Length: 283
Image (cartoon, rainbow, N blue to C red; front, side):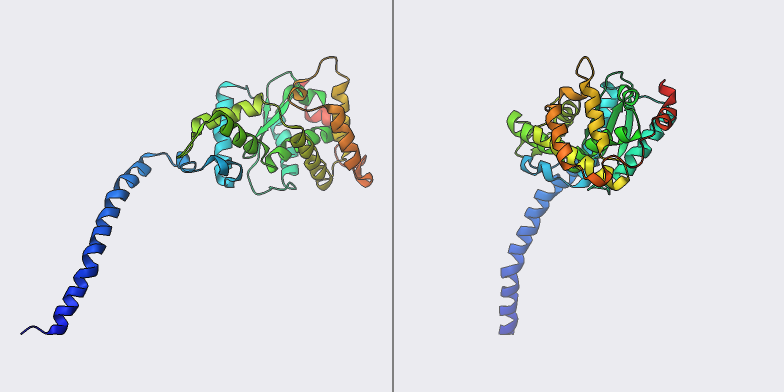
C-alpha cells in the first residue's frame, strides 16, 4: 500500500522538477552557440563587444589602452615614420615619464615616440600614446619647453578628450550598432583624430592647464609653455602643431592668467646647452 505522504511528495517533486528541467535545457540551447562564438573571437575584440556608443567616453583603462595600441599600430604601420635613434627616444621618454608620473592618470603605461618629420608637431591618442616630431625637437630651446609640449599632450589623455570626440563622431557618422562599436572603424577614426582632426577650444585650454600643473609638480618652469607658443608665432608660416588648435594668442593669455608667480620662471630644464647636447644626434 502506498503511503499517501509519499504520493504527495512525488507529485510535488514532479511539479517543480520538470519546469526546472525545461529551463535548464533552454539555457543550454541559448548559451551553447554563444559560448562557441565567444571562443572564436580574439580576446582584444572581446573588449569592445557590447560597449555602447554612449559608454565610449567612459570605457575602462584596459579597454582604452588596447584601443590606443591598435590605433598606434595602424599609424606606425602606414601613417608615420618613427625616428629610431635610441638616444633621442630614451631622452624624450625620460622627460615624458617624469611628467606622466605626476599627471592625473599615472597608473596607465605611457609610450613616448619620436616621429621622423621636419614639421613642428606633437600629437597623442588615447591609452597613453604620445608622439613628437624631430622638427619640434629641433625647434624648442630647452628641455622645459619640450616638457610643456609633452605635458599638453598628456593632458589630452588624462582628460580623455579623444574618446569624447570619438563618441560624438560615432554618433554623428553612425559607426556604432545596436550590438556595440565596430572596432575596426573605431581605430580608423582614432587615427584621423590623432593626425588631422582639430581639437575644440575648450579641450586645448584644458590640456594647457593640465600641462601647467604637471610642469609645476615635476619641477619645470610653467612659463616654458608660453615661451614655446610665442616662439611659434614668430615663424613665417604656421607650424603643423597650430593647424588643429584654436587661436594661439588666446591660449597664451589664458596661460598667463593661470601661472603661479612662485614657479613661473624658475625650475629644471632651462639650460639650452644641456638640451642641445641631449638632442645632438639631430644636428
